[in-house]
Amino acid sequence: MKAKMTVNKAFIISKIDPRIYGSFLEHMGRAVYTGIYEPGHKTADKNGFREDVKALVKELNVPIIRYPGGNFLSGYNWEDGVGEIGSRPKRLDLAWKTVETNEVGLHEFMNWANEVGSEVNMAVNLGTRGVDAARNIVEYCNHLGGTYWSDMRRKNGAESPFKIKTWCLGNEMDGPWQIGSKTADEYGRIAAEAAKVMKWVDPDIELVVCGSSGIGMSTFASWEATVLEHTYDHVDYLSLHSYYGNQKNDIKNYLAMSVGMDRFIKSVVAICDYIKAKKRSDKTINLSFDEWNIWYHSNEKDSKNEPWQQSPPILEDIYNFEDALLLGCLLITLLKNCDRVKIACLAQLVNVIAPIMTAEGGVAWRQTTFFPFMQAALNGHETVLRHNIDVPVYDCDDFKEVPYVEAVTIHNHEKNEIIVFAVNRCAEETVDFTVELQGFNISNIIEFSEICGYDVKQTNTKESCPVAPKAAQNAKIDGNQLIAKINPLSWNMIRVGL
Ligand code: AHR
Image: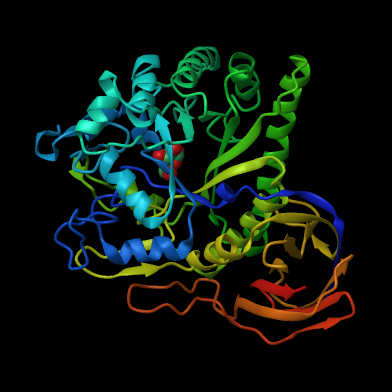
């Protein structure tokens, strides 16, 4: 099979906001306790955080981490997580039916995020709380000092403000499963008022307002429109959430799910721009795809969980090779929409539907999905180029005319290189893949790496990591063309020097 992609140096989609490679860490399951934090662990630092996990998070190069939830957020009192650790309350977490000890809270997480080199995307509870708690946490985190909340931060050990730039206004507020869920008008009003006063406390912050919990919600589209009617002038981004799974065990259909993600993004862009037109506004609302991932392997096990445990193993999906391929397609889709998707968070980061897993008292290890994410987060920077792609297509259960090759080309001006990410969705055929790079003088292939050749159900484990990138050979340069053979069912990264 042949595929030809054509790009031109002058035609760009947009510069990539590095926050597109964000992730998410919720107080649930073993994400925090026995995930990033395990005081008894042999690699624990003086604050009880695992160095082995920190090393893997750094390897993943995550620029921003959404925190502390998720559904957990909507019942959370942020004040429970500050002050002396021994005096913090234990609470029922009604979202996941577990017990939260609050041993890790705001300061501990901010320190940890700083150590792994990530910013924090802080979420405020608009389920059980409201405007007052929202403005107070911004004052606590971002105000210099000399006021009740900012002085409390200083007393608690952080003399300088945290200067958190990105904030989420609640979580999935249309979901009946959400503590304190709301109608679009109820949420729109409270989000607008919270946003207004949060920006009065710190005008430099950026705010993400909740879109509906998913495209499958009956409220989808009208929710977004109503919420934006209320909040348009006060917020900067609208959120999208979506999880994918191969429940049908049909790989052609599964790998086409990024086509659904693309449609979802374009639909939400259309809604944002409809409200923009209606309001005759100059302002553009961009998107924060702040929960995306594969989530289905653990569903059956989790339906049998005993309530009110402390950090039980929940949502511990073990990913396989086909999941890594879909994750690659989803990443490429986010990048192709980077003119509007400015923030995205792989949900989640450690143990809970995560690229990084830990064994309590044991090792930390990389899932199959770790690798395409890591390669993109390390190398996929600067500008996404517009492209035309000539490629055979297929039909499957849920989608029509799915291209066999999903690909994106990035121009990294700083490093003077071109990066191509490509997934071959076809199980049977190698693709002769040509990328015509108009307007570029290309010199050499810096790196061609691929993930391919495994049984689609092959997983990594804590003992071994078979699914990982390996060097590929079959690429060459001919004039301004990059010509590569991309293997059946493969994720590929090709870096070309200019
Ligand atoms: O990431 C797991 C859960 O998925 C989050 O808590 C929630 O926001 C979503 O439904």
